Length: 237
Image (cartoon, rainbow, N blue to C red; front, side, top):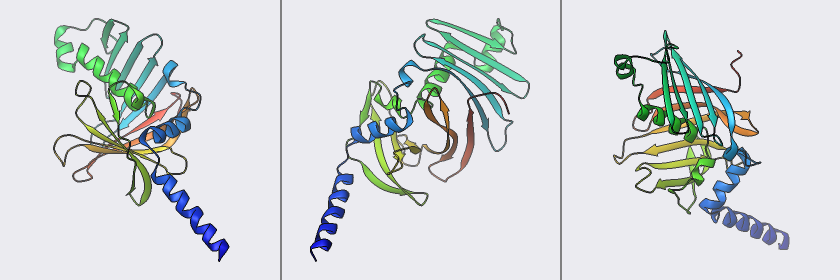
């Protein structure tokens, strides 16, 4: 009877401990899994990303990120069209099918603008810098961690919102309760049936950072499939 009481006490203690993990603690555990040596802040590397969608041709992108030098570039090819955006500190340049001085007509038609360049920079550095990017200024980490079952798997879920200057969307990040690997994230806009969820699978290690290898995108409202991004650390097949 004494042994049974001790076992029950231990089980209750473990459950209580799991329930009491804070949002900050969960994020730190996940960062320790993905980036144990804190390499993201000095990241310098190249990502090779292929996006496949149900109807369109694959889009192959070569993304260069050098955070210390404030350099970002993305060169993407789909069918016969190749576009490139380069942000080197305060200088932004474009190219279209390797023409480094495209006409204003081409720039307008294919969205070769400063706004689009910054959009790509923010998009790729955010998604491929997760979960480390959740420590950026303006991020609000909700301290109540929930347990949820998603796609028949149990997760610890972290809720994230942002200062109004940063963004209006509400995000949820799903972490494996044992390894703390990030395996799903989901965002909602102001409308309840808006937003998307992203299923992550596999890991590609780049600069000692474990980055999800594939990201499959779906609509929240109807589970409609949008496409999948596949990451490689090399352009070799």
